Image 1: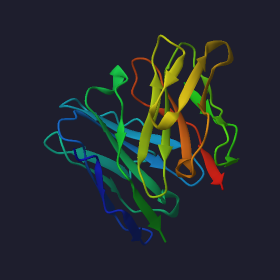
Image 2: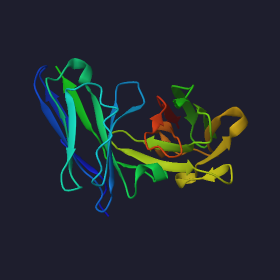
Image 3: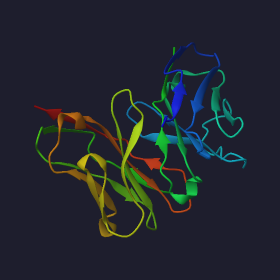
Image 4: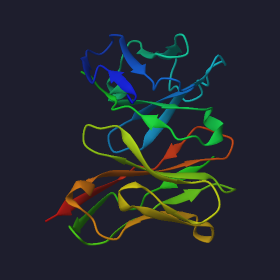
Length: 116
Length: 113
């Protein structure tokens, strides 16, 4: 079946502009995660959605970052007033069950963001 | 808080040779442990995971990993690498009852003919 998809695959923007990154999880997966992968770094947890519960936003680095998940499916990560340090690959993952079950997270190909 | 260390940033191995990637974690109890592989331009793919039970875990693509509690390690091995194994490998830890995986910085594997 179809995996996790993300769009756009690449995004170049100017400092100070807002960007929106989209994630389509695997159909039927209840949990959705956003991670950030900076150059030479491991993945950094950003936010977690589980069903209709309030999202865990504890990993968001600043209030310029926000995310929503509509209808329990598609998610959008928004970065306002982008800064050069926001340049990274943003990865989305989904899992069939709630994350605290240790359920496997399936990752999308990522969106490579470059802020000039 | 948990953390993961992958001591080797880059490893070069000859095709057909064995491969071992090191992973050390820091956590007070037995965590969930994972190895992911990321090929260029691709998302992360799960190779294997450990939750409990047998400490030697078999995964896809001929990989295996061994959990050693006394050493807080979860090293990944493959007896004979193929050129297609050239990729970046990430070790991750997720404490029981939590979903926030912590990833190591990754090890890049280059396979030479």
